[in-house]
Every structure is written in C-alpha cells, then in structure tokens.
Length: 297
Image (cartoon, rainbow, N blue to C red; front, side, top):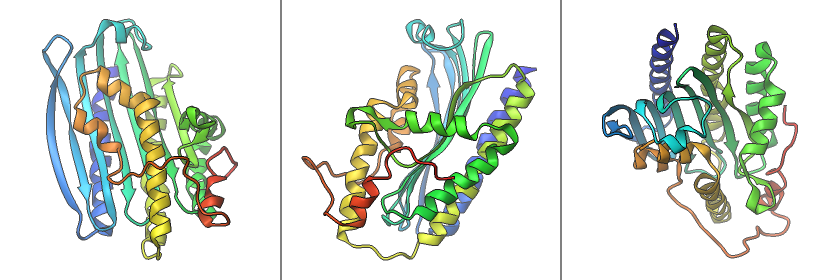
C-alpha cells in the first residue's frame, strides 16, 4: 500500500514543480531557467535516486530554486538513529522552493512538502512561510488567510502557525523570526496513510494561491536604495537561519545531497553590517516590529 502512495507523492511534487515554473514564466519574460537532472549515491555508494533542480534568474525574480527529489538507499547509521524510523534504509521525496524577488516590495517566499519512509515508519512534513521587507500588512493577512482556509478542513492552522513561528526563528538574534511565518509541520502521521497523504497534497496545492497574487499586486511598486539596503540586510538574516538552524539544510548535507541544490535557497545579494539599524521613523524600522509572532489571520 505505501509503495503506491510513495509513487503518487513523487508524481505530485513533479507536477507541482511544473505548475509553479509556469506561473513564474508568466510573470517574468526574461526568466532564465537552468534545469539539472541529477543522481546521487547512497551511504554505501550504491545508486540512491536523485532529483530535478531548477534555478531561476530574471528581471522580476532575482534568484530562485524550485526543486524536486526522490532519494532512497542506505544512510549513515548515526544520522539514521536521530530520525523517526528504525532502519538505515531511507526513502524520501518532496518539493522545496525558495523565491527571492528583485523588488523589495515583493516578499521572499519559501515552501516545501515531503514524504519520508524509514524502516517501518513513514511521515510527512512541510509548510510555507513569507519573508517580507516592507510593512504591507494586507499582504501578510492575505498570505495567512489562504493558509488558514487551506487548513480549515483539517483544523490544523493554529498548531501549524505556532510551529512555524517557533521554527523559523533566529534564536541567536533574540528570537527574531526570519519573516512573518506561515504554516509548518513535521513528523506528521495520524496512522491513516490515505488521510495524511490527501491533506499534505491538498495543502501543497494552495501554495500558488498564497503567493503569486502578492507578486502581481506589488510587481510595479517603486522602490529606492534604502529599500534595497534593508532587503539585503534581511537577506543576511535569511542566510544565518538557513546555515545555522534549518533542518532541511542539515538533512540534505547528511544524506549525501547535492550541494548546489541544497544551497540554492541562499539569496543572490546579501549585506552584513555591524550593528545594522534602519533609519529612525522609516517603514523599515516599522517592519522590524513584525518579525515576531502575530495573529495575521
């Protein structure tokens, strides 16, 4: 039974990858797409699956990655012992994406949805979160509103939002969040494979609705150098989280993942400034107050 759902999930994330790619192409006529179909070896140097990495650069989307993978085979026993299952054999499939727009008035977005099977255990994980650089509260309310609606049939929004707020946080920066959150879940297994599968597929299908209307709304917004400086500063915080805290990054590195595909999440332009602070009274100073848990929906 589980083998059927594993194939269905792998097929689904590839189709979703295509849909997201098409939406990005519709927005950005100068979008350059570099696609790599790659394969990996498992911990014992046997064939271990692979994936499809798509790297984007354009006039609207400064850099982005929309990736799918399906891996299998042996993993490091020490790492295996830290997961949910009871085996050194692992299968995992998912979609992971990060979109960094050029215009600072358009937020960065991240999402991933995955299914993992290890020994006799299987589970799902994923979510989506928004990292804005300008205090357009209506955009944050819209993003969260879509996910609250998506979660409504499963009565899971409040829990997934709280998990997201806690997870995407730079704890070393006085618990400053990476963005304004969204939803996040991991190790999800109610014991009903069909029900869990349907929920995760349904949630993943709401990503396009949650993000691209914001892009369309802000695509022609004017911006200045102060906006860019703040965006690059927040890109630095993004890098800090992804390299220090992100479990997905660590998972990829510890399962012999493809380095370029793992680090494609990093923004193209970053600025690290000693004791950075936005100008007093600016919209950017106001934006700093939003990188903490709030009830947006």
